[in-house]
Structures are given as C-alpha cells and as structure tokens.
Image (cartoon, rainbow, N blue to C red):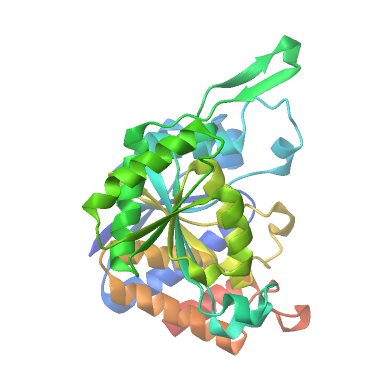
Length: 351
C-alpha cells in the first residue's frame, strides 16, 4: 500500500515524539512492504513564528489531500501566560478540527498488565479496564458565540449543538458498541442544560435502530466519580466537547501515564491521529518524553486503514518494551529510564 501521511510535529515535545513514531511506522512499512510518503507541515506556535498563523492554508491543503494526519502537540508557555494574545496555538487546533470536519475524537483507555501498579488507583479497581470515549469535537462551548460585556467585566461562552451533530457522533458510538460489548453510555447534564436535553432525547430516539445495544444515561459529575471507582463498568461512552475534554484526561491516569494514551479524530474524508498529552514544554529538548502514545496513535491509523497485522506489530512491540523496562522516566526511576530516541529505536528494531 502507498500512503501519503501529513506530518504535523507542532510544538514542545511534539517534534521529538513524532520522530519516534516515524521510525516505527517506517519499520512497519519495510516489514509489510508498504510505502509511506511523509509530508511535513507547520501548525501551532511554530506556525505562528514562521507565518503568523497557527493553521496556515498550506497546512490545510496538505492535510486535506493526505490519506491521514499524524500529529504531535501544540502549545507554548508564552501564549499561556499572555491573556491578551490575539493569536494562540490552540486556535490552530480548533480551526483544523473544524475545517477538516474532525467531528469524533476516539480515545481508548486501557490498562497494561505490566503497569497496573503504576496507576494512582488501586489494582483491584482498574484491572481489566478497556473503555472508549467518543467526544464530539466540532461543536459545543468551544465553538459557540463568546465575548465580553459591561466594559469587559462580564464574559460569556455559549454552548450550542444541533440534532444533526449529536446524531453523527452517536451513530459512531452505537456502531462501535455493536463491535464491542453492546454497551453504550451517554454522558450529559440533562438535569440542568438544554443542550444536554437535546443530546439525551436524540440518543433515545436512535435506540430503536440498535436494539441489541444497552444504553445508559448518566450525568457528567456521576461519571467523573465512577471513572475512578469502577472504570471497568464502562465500555463505550459518548459525550459533548467540553465534558469529553475533561473526562478523557481524567481517564488517562488509569493506565499509569498520559504518555501511553493514543487517540484518533475521525472526519468524513480524512482522520487525524495524535497522543492525548499536550506539548509538555518543560521536557522539550531533554530527550525524556514518552513517545508511546504517539506510536500507539500510529497503530490506530494502521488499524483504520484495514492493516490490522501492522497495528498489532506496533502494539506487541510496545508491550514488550513495557515488560522489559525499555521506558522513559515517567514510567521508571531516573537511573533506569531510557531516552525518547532510545525507546523509538528499540521499538523500530523489534518490529
């Protein structure tokens, strides 16, 4: 297979973890007789510095014409610490999601047998956890009308959803539930929010089309509690943009490190694959960042291309690395930790 992959390294540790993912993907391509054409493009703070735009038109063109996008991370402290900044790296990410139509963020959360005791949660609570969040990605409060009034003393952000947006995301959730254990949880705040009531009634109306799926409806605060009490009681969860952003970061601690959690943002024509961690600027350039989340995101990419053997080869290599201690300092004592590039090289060699 000949694959054209847009490569968006971004900011902070993004370039470092992307480099390791490229090594591993190239090893997979060699082993299974594929050709990968990598097409680099600018985004985030790096793009602002270069052209003044966090998601330039040229980057959009490259992403739109690619078979998939492999993405690192964006963000820089100089923007975080400047509330008056008019252009921010995160604007590029929101613009990219909107313009590419990346409406469903798929975030699996699972445990690794060799790392169960690395989690801050007790073994008996998390063992066997294997759940997936589907977070709606192009609507809600992040894209609603916002502004200031009363000479800047009052601020507002509007959460808006259409039935069509809810249906599109829920359909993905029902289909995924059918391939798994036929359990679906709709996460909302329908006791308070009108947008959540639209979510709930829309999903309820879709139940008849998927009679084999058992659907539950839970408030977001209850799910936040249950995720740390009984995470393995969940399988597929669907929710809106803001709730999904918060809950998926909470769920990431179950595995023992955010540096292990991959994700995919699914669109109608192209999908994007990225680790769930941010740009972690404190670690940039120190060769200590965990590249496994990015590498496992690449495994999701191969899976979505229908190349399950290739995806399995990556996951098997990652499991071997975890079992043998070929890990970065987030998963090992400093004197036993390996560098970002050393982990990438080892994984590529295993494949």
